[in-house]
Length: 101
Image (cartoon, rainbow, N blue to C red; front, top):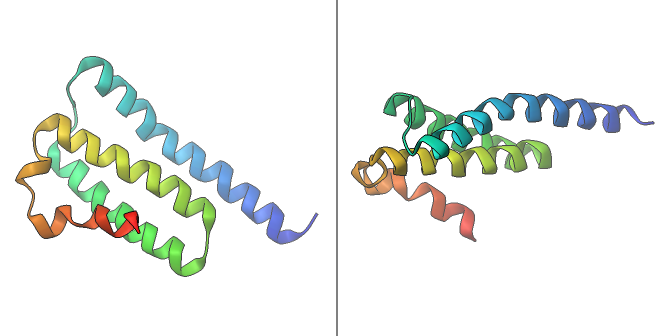
């Protein structure tokens, strides 16, 4: 087995573990129909996720891209549940349109 394959496997497992925390929180928020985390947490998460997506694109890394695209959608959904998504600057909300191409 190549070192690159092992590194990709480790990267996938570590990213899945890291992302599982946010998926778990998201599922609980959906069930409660409310978010128990401050809005700023989601705004910072959205920005950092956007930057990680760019990083993944530059590195041509499908593990980072797949995990961050899922997380990015969850961050947007939680901002919608909080009623904060539409309050954000239109330029800020325009980020997701970059990924529709």
